[in-house]
Length: 264
Image (cartoon, rainbow, N blue to C red; front, side, top):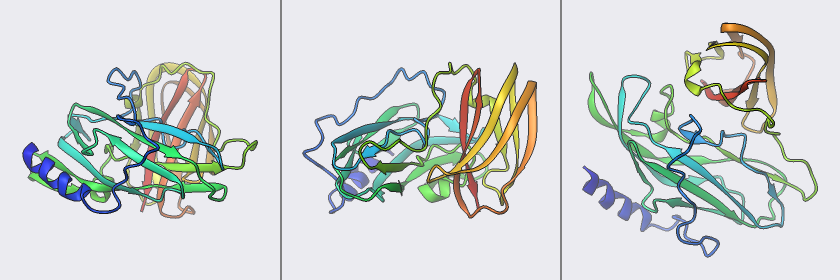
């Protein structure tokens, strides 16, 4: 199976559009195999550093492929064949360079360059496929867009934010807290959904803070105060919001936990 992936990725990367740039050293980013963050993909999609227009930029994303996700789906490998939507002058490169991320392995993607693009949010589109196995359907190949419809999927969802030099970065990441809340303690169901969904947080802790939901531009579309003693459950309605990806963050004095939401 793995030999087949190497052949396929070699063919795919031979086409124009796969990015190699003098901007990058080799390797383009360091794989954090001892990543202490509980997320499969870090940082969360609203937490990449902003790009100052006209200044050199470099940032990276860490990928930690799971053996299983959604409780019942086994991952053989995930292949990223292209990343589009980058602002002019910003390029990417993957480590491993093949773009093949096997189950129980780590990787990273680097973004670097200098842009003269206008200030704003630039959502990225990750294209590729994954080979997964389920007890009912056996082994099958899914596109990343198909995989993204499954809860707790390992598909990256990112945007790059450009600002003018001297402006404040948006959205502003939450800092100054020690993350002791685990991603597994936050549940969103159903996901994907039609705008109405349940949020459950089960930490065993006394928590106070807020639930914040942002769209891919970083604009807050929903806020709700949070006061919980061990277990918290609420129903959120975003029926007035457009279809697409959103980020839900639970921000408390005990830490911050985030999950993406897909409204269809």
